[in-house]
Image 1 (tube, rainbow, N blue to C red):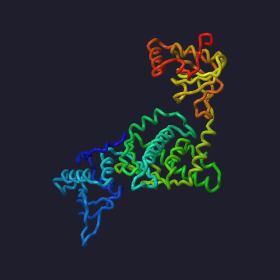
Image 2: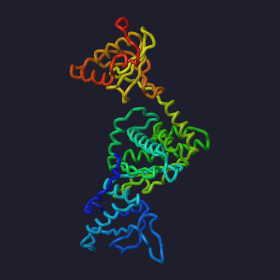
Image 3: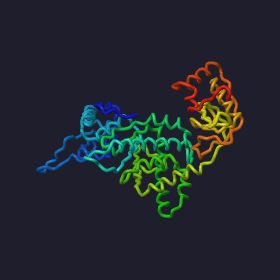
Length: 406
């Protein structure tokens, strides 16, 4: 989800903890400018304070009462509400970030790219690249949280997509920085997995650059490092002078066990790209094949000649955590697949799901048989298969199959 850029409505002061508010102000660089101990603190935005004639001039100044239960202020809620309203009206970009964090409590992930500016702006493609890299990184972390693997392909894709639906993305006015807010506790597993994996990736890159060896990347798979993560980092870093990923825990909660209260940002540079690219290729190459028994609907048929075997593409219904697979079939099995497609029936096939093809090719297929379904399900599959396809020849990739052939 993306946060709206329209006027922000501040949260209800009765639901805001002043300790959380002050922690967020400090996190985003606001400066504490005195106050009365035990009663209130005063804050000014980062970079907006100047000294003129011995006096401080600021466009925004927040007075935040410290303790809801102290009894120091009868109008406590009014004072806190005024501070929140001032935040909502502030032109400081950090003010919006603080309000989002208050409204949507969660752990924060911040990506920063040091990209060249053109007239104080970044190219459209640079902003799109930042968002693409951040999304890919979150998807990789969610997949890795389900279990370590060097290459996931489309495994755990539904889980990762569902996780991403919970994440809120803050505004990115500069195109060089992006912040995501991940709900706690629902999203903490992927967040901790991401932090651990990024730290392991940083160590593995340093080892590879120092020794030339890839052993550290192989050992880091158990820590969440995978092809998808290294690919996301390549996207994040390419075209920049450097990039970093920083995480901050929800102020109202304790940090996860085993993690620092304030994790250090993890930085990557263009010099790291060769190691990251080599690791990504290694993970794809070394991923073992898996024995599967897949049930799927035939969505594409192709063979080079009017007779003989051919290749089919199946939309997977069961048997493997991927969306589609390709299968090279002999003539008899190909004929079965054609007839199943014509009548709208799924087929079942056993074989090895190979990593060489991105876990999308079944090698050594056996036992190709149609799977009978009830009439309602058969009609649904037929509509799904032929939706948007005008002719059977289109579904077959342009290869005509005459009555004498199949």
